[in-house]
Image (spheres, rainbow, N blue to C red):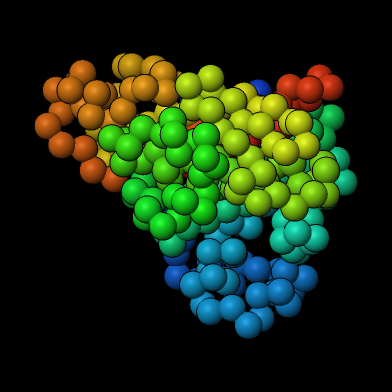
Length: 257
C-alpha cells in the first residue's frame, strides 16, 4: 500500500481552494523515481534520503498530471526548494515514512509551504531553539504536540515565503499565536493559521462525523472521549496557514503524523 486513505481525508479537509495536496507511504524502490536532473544534489545522500525524495516527487508529478501539466523533473533550486514549471508553485516534505506534496497555479496561489513530522513531543532543548520568548510564555505545556506543531508550522512558513521574499528566516524570525491562529514573520507578513488533530487506522469513519477543522484548544483526547474511543494511536496533527494578501493565498500546510 502506497497511500493511507484516512490521512488523505484529513489532508483534503484542510486544503485551501486552488491547492492540491497528496501523500505517499515511502516504499523501497522510490529512489528509482528520481529523474537524472534531480540526482546530483542527492548523490552523497544515504538511501533513505534518496528514497524519501523520490517518493515526494512521485506525489508531486501525480498532482501535476491532475492539474493538466506534463510530468517533469523537479530539481533542487536555491534555498533547497524544488524548481517548479513556469506557472506552478508547490512544496515537498517528508519524514521517515510519509512523503507529501502540495501544488497550485501561480495565478491562484502566491506560494505554498508544507512540512510533516511524527506526532511526538518536541524535546525541551529544541523547544528553546524554536520558540520565541513570547511563545514559551503562552505555549500549552499540557499538550504534548504543541511544541512539535510550532516547529512544523515555522518550517512551512519558511518554505512558503522564501520564494516570495528570498529571505532566510530563523525560527525566531517567525512568531506563531495559536490563540489568534496567526503567524507573523519578521518582515511583516501576517498569516492565518488553521489546524486540526485527526486519527487514522479504523477510527476515521467515526471522526468524519465531526468536522476535522477544530478549535485550537481541542486536543486528541477530547475527540476520543466524544466518540467513546478509549485509545487512539497513530495520530495526525495538521495545520494550514494562509496569507491572503494581494488577492492570492500563501498556503502553509504543516502535518504532524
